[in-house]
Image 1 (cartoon, helix red, strand yellow):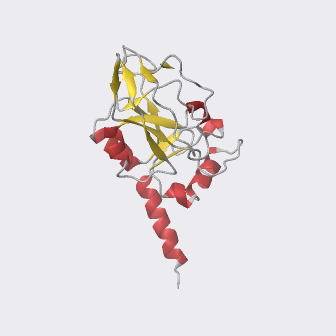
Image 2 (cartoon, rainbow, N blue to C red):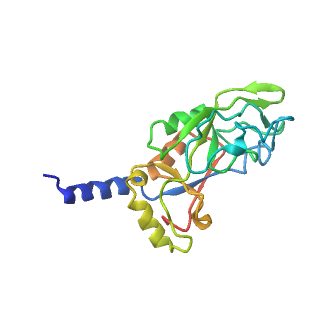
Length: 202
């Protein structure tokens, strides 16, 4: 017989291990210029079917996106999390070092795509686009923070995740990481990353 009380206790223990959640953002310090990627290489076809502009916000893309024209500014510093204006906000441009850390944790629905970047006339490999779409969890636009927390915590997918991202509603538009994941990132001294707090999970 299933003991639902035990399941509830396990859920709360799992949640406590990941709380509090912190917001993860791109740093503006020590990156050389902001953002490090300000444009794709000349001639990039934004209207093509595989364009980065067609990356979906709510699911994994059903096509192989064309990332072969990511152009870094000459003044940019290569960091583990790279700021790139042309790329959509529902993902991150991460180094292999960053991916290796993330691979040891549970992420919400996501997929990695290789991104060979152009930097000072040379191709740079070892970077990935981490596509992190909006979870299938609805938070009302006018929800108070305590209600938003409750909705997130009631989702088994998000309760088990160390990293997830919301783009809607805009007032709760953040990428959240668990305390253990933050500690691992800091211990590895990954660069180009800053942490903060949001209106929820304070």
